[in-house]
Length: 524
Image (tube, rainbow, N blue to C red; front, side, top):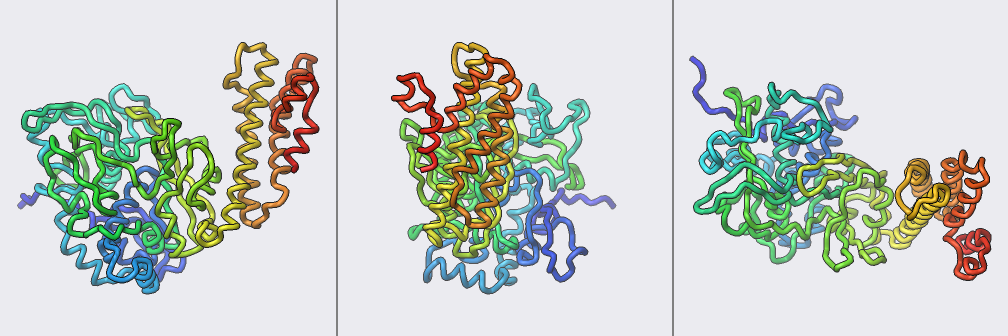
């Protein structure tokens, strides 16, 4: 007889998280390619990394895992005892306690079923009644790397006339992306009481880049990534999104009272997946608004926060063209000088206490506020957190100066290339040009290699001369054809002075070059 049981896909048991096992794992090479949440926690010390290929999905998954980890370890409150020492005790044990993991799994099993009829994981079952009949989004809308509507086919091509059903394992990752990186603007209409609306606000991480400490195992990675709760946090009030009642969407959004709610309860979107009869695939999805009011995103522990010219605090946006080394000092120092006053992610205040050999993984999505997705961002550093301000203040300052001089010559090169192009073409004003783009493409990879080479050797002397030489070589390469003419030679030589800081006021007034004096000033 065919089964009449509703479809089920429990995230504790199903192998939906792709992983890479440590080479010293007891059965290395014969391990499963993917695991469920239960096995991930029980064998976290044997797993080197999670290999989710979509960076925003991994960033979102990390936040879910941090919330589960603080529950399993009891590190969701400041006390009893000193929080850092309690985390050190967990680390010294070498793995999560089996009894603690099993208790959490047994107590929350029904909350982690992707298709549970009453409490589907991170979904709202009320959408079948609150959304207009037939007003579903479709699987192409659900899968964030597919084009839908009038959006461009940027990440993958699909045939809208014959949509390919994503597997449940794929669907849950895109469910997470929607909750954290979903766009603002038009969505399916939803009616709650007297409120009917068809627009949603942007997800809490939209267009941002988040930074995560990573160790030699997922066990180390999860412990290093835990945010320290404030003294007033109470676990019975600080609820994860899957632990609380759905609430009234037309009312105020949930209060963020500690790490669990801050990690998981900021979503602006409500979703409901429609499975096939087997529960192996998703055939459709409802996607609409979750709250009419905006959920606060201030305080996320994995973002670099800085000030706008108006004094407003905002997270540093994702930029697929910006290499990660240019943000390293913002991860090591608690606060950097400058008008924007960037502040390091709060998690890095305590992460080095777990290990001084932690790398940093930067994950994000370069996007606009609404439908446009530009590029995903995924970058990783070598072990850097051993040079954090708390562990090695002098070294952290030297790293900051090394980064600053590398960036200074990058900015000077860009200005020199633009000025050379302007004077060569008689352009009415300074603007972006092919020379500046070409020069940057030559300089920044070389500067990054130089930065990491010096970082590895802890060699901070004489860096200015090397970065200057790299800028000179890039400038000469992009202007090589132009200097063959008298007009081009004059334009390029006049602009070259910007590589050395520009003309001094006295030299500019006299009409003479300032290359030699500027060069001496930089050397000093």
